[in-house]
Length: 132
Image 1 (cartoon, rainbow, N blue to C red):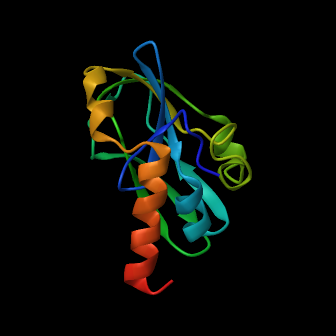
Image 2: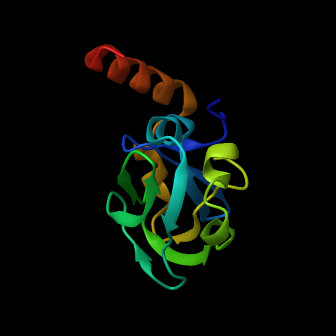
């Protein structure tokens, strides 16, 4: 459910890092909490992405949530398939449901993110704190 080759943020985004490029999306936990996603606002290529700042948003039948960038850099590609098929995030959040690809300005930032095991522990603590 939480692939071991990804890095995770406390705001429930993930990053798959390959050769200085980060493919980012929302975690299974986030899409599960949101419910059926009906609209996605994507960043535009060449936009700056700053770690911890909004990169876009996802709208579900329950709520609208900002998607914060887990890394800083320049957006090189957005997953425009989601314009017509936002449900891909619910169906395959780590594959076809990715949001953007970012050319990282500081690859060392991933060290501040959690690995899969740390992320699972983080969401377990969240669940305990909220009684869920």
